[in-house]
Length: 150
Length: 393
Image 1: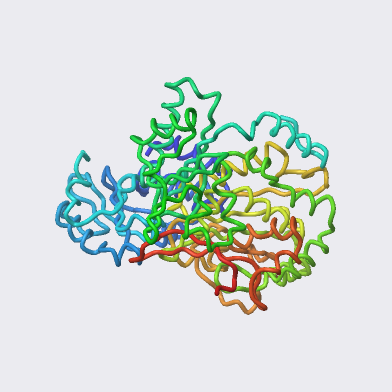
Image 2: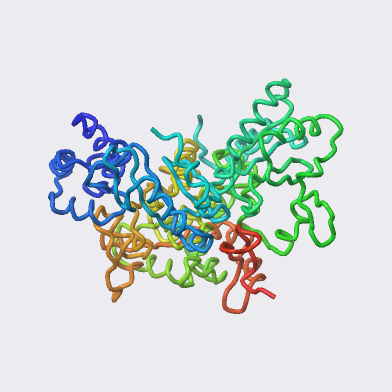
């Protein structure tokens, strides 16, 4: 990731140590993962120890320390989706893209995660791809949902 | 834009907004809360705008993207004002037909109305639908009436009147007394009396003090806080500023999970709008009271919904709870007195100040007053949000 851009993001949050999580969230959303070099730069600029940054980056679910696929697939495992068949949908998604939840495929096409309740329970089971919500997904129509992503 | 610096300024601003509006002009309200959006509400509102433009009607009919009215099961929900005709499960294909009726014969599109399966009757108005009929909606009722991205809509509905009343007409002690008298209890789940929490912070010797909105709503199946924050962010800000005034805090935080992008967007926008009008910042309404608010996005940790964990996360550290031998209203964020309340608790504050504690305590049980929003989810017929009195028959 471009080091000037990282400085810009830090600047946006006024370079305060208390903004560390907000800075990392912005880096994560732009770059989809947090490379070591970027974290070292954040550590220097905010004057926060590298170990503390690693503590935070591994604690919060939003952060990834490994490269992510071009498309982020989130399968909601909240209670409402669960009782409507989310586990079967997850199985089918795992079969189709050949990775387990928490993994990224070799071509860096998809990253798969299970997530907590997204709050659109009227639509369960819900699969969210790159921020777009697909509702009432059944195991049978999972292939259609995953189609069209390159 | 001129800052609002007195009660007269605020009144003038309200009149100015009202003079630009015609209450009789038809308005198409489409719920653009996260649930309806997932059902395709954006496509529906786009279709309405395109159709109005095609027919050259932009000046005759308004459109408005509103917050969640609660009936998520039948989204996208569309309400036509001023008749308040309620259409459910509207698709972009239905749009031309609806528009032609608004302008032409004023008839309703029967097939999009709610059908009562017991009687086979079609019900035209939201208030007739059984799902809404038994509710008492003092908080959620505003959601469908205002554009969730418009501060003017909130002001037109009488928004920030409670702030005016508190800052210009009441001492902090009087506000505190009113909140205590209302017996408002925390809506996050623990039900701790808000007035007592506020009083503890107010009396704590340390400075500065802080107020926080807990919008880290992570319990599976719960989305009432999101509906409020997305749909009516100014009502929460108004409650928060009043809270700050009461305990003597000049800085507030909204801690909202990043999994709620629309809530983050709308509350951030609301803060900017309030700043532009001078409803946040220095010398609010000419009262001499200064107050600023920051949004902090949660990075995906369920535990951060716990108050002390949330505060450590706000400090930019790993969100881990600490034992509460000393309450956080005495030593909270950066070890300073901090009042943290849930979104819904804050949203109740303007109601209490506006209508008075006596009116608020008319609803509910002996020990718990007011209304509560519940989310109904699972293998049920009507998924959505309902708001009912604390006592239920």
